[in-house]
Image (cartoon, rainbow, N blue to C red; front, top):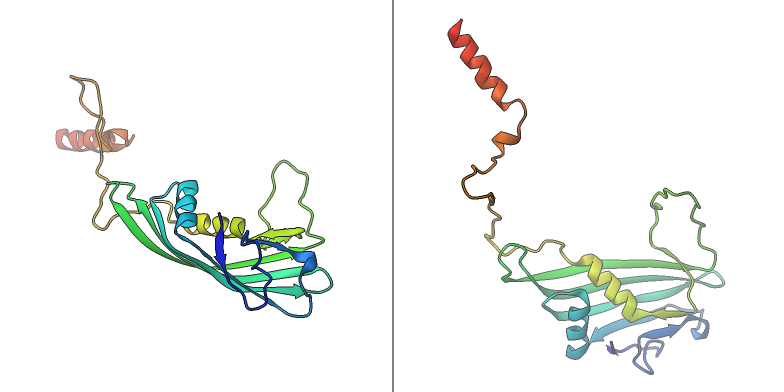
Length: 192
């Protein structure tokens, strides 16, 4: 994906690849980030994410040096996407506005070797890369911001009952184990 990038200090410009070589960036000031993919790049991204369209897409923010080697990225993702409704398959347009925060550290906390690992409290910490791929960051942030079950207005999922011919379909009441006991108790109370 080839973004249309613009910056006032040149760190994200150049090849237009969206790759930032962190070792070559000046460490005495923050670096502005702006990524606005063109129509072709947005269409390619929609295909990768399995959605209908990405109408608008922009990431803007700053990459700030921390200490001697670490970096912090604070940015805002703004996007307008179109996805098929999970009920009707009609197009559903959604506006996404998400904050993106990442801490790129040379010495990230070690993950335990145990089979069951708890999610760390701060999931924004990542190992310091030599090259920061802004396009990959944009794709990840957008995929995490997508509604998992988009629904068109008024779309309702109605219960379906499927069974073999000649057999009564199973209802929700049939699956409740104590539903028949109330009927039995009522019959016994009437007979007493």
